[in-house]
Amino acid sequence: MLRTMPGTKPEGRPAVEAWLTRVKPELQPIAYRIDALIQEALPNVVCAVKWNVPFYGSRGHGWIASINSFNAHVKLLFFDGPKLTPTLPVGKGNNAIDYRSLEELNEKQVKAWLKQAKQLPGWLKAE
Image 1 (tube, helix red, strand yellow):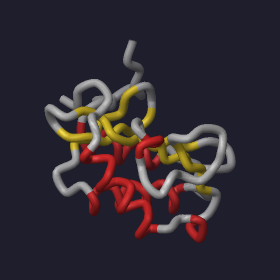
Image 2: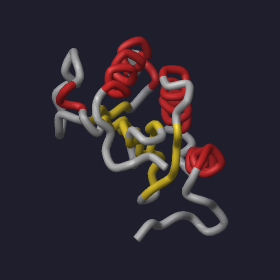
Image 3: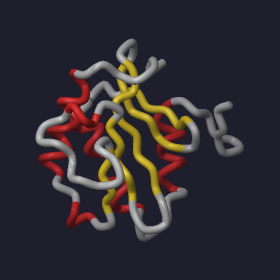
Image 4: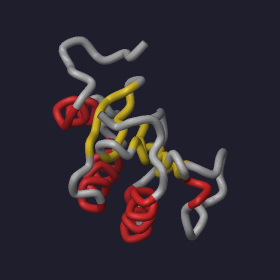
């Protein structure tokens, strides 16, 4: 079952923008910057909040990335991360990167990964 916050719709920018406002204040700059990089790299991006996290993809193609916020970091997840080059930094998995500060965010590389991810098969169907 899809869960959303009361008063929000799961689809579109308004839902993502509402989600961003609920990120811990000290992590908001990271979450907002990742969201902006996604929009810059994927100009026609479709977004929605599913399972209480923002998903990004393209119509008819599928979801390619999502972001999530935790106590001490923001996670950028690529649904087909193992196919990206260069490979994502070693971590808990091979499809996500954790950012604890803006300084850790290599914007040029993130955009390159996003553009690659757009060319790969998406996960499920982005409405």
